[in-house]
Image (cartoon, rainbow, N blue to C red; front, side):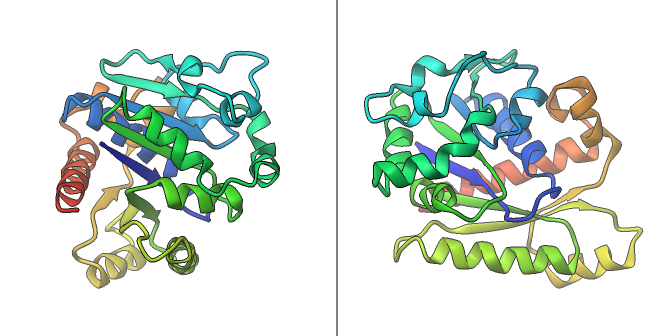
Length: 243
């Protein structure tokens, strides 16, 4: 049982696309009971999986002290993969967690979900606040997508600081080069500087996830992008097994 956060303080890095595809790998390749929990108000994970959020749902219904998030989970069109969707009301979550005054509220909810799921993946909003702090306390592993750029490098430093601030037993961090195009010199330099980091190529198949509303492995399983994501998932499973 493990919780995996896909997190970056910088938007536009391919975070949600990576979260959806990794969740699909967990459910399909590893055949694990998998829940993807969308903590980003944009509900990008739900959109990519073809799941629309239920109307009149509030963040309060998930995080209130007497709540049961399991009743808000929705099935996807993929075996072993369910979604706990977000909506715009989750924008108020930071203030609500402050009011509750419970620093491990998210961790407790994730722990409760483990009775039904082997893997819980958290698609996190690109924020630095109480929500991100609670994510760090709940996660067993933090995946950080990093497009090759100086701003991404700075964003990674911020994530490392945030994770370390979560406590002595903070989760390990796995940086991933995302949207990499080896035709570009900056991208080649980033790859050469970090040869052991997993890399996800910039590919049309990944871009098609949004138009087809499916993970790339579901419609282009032999594509370089699908193979790279599957290899990343294998690395994640190995890292979890070595805890």
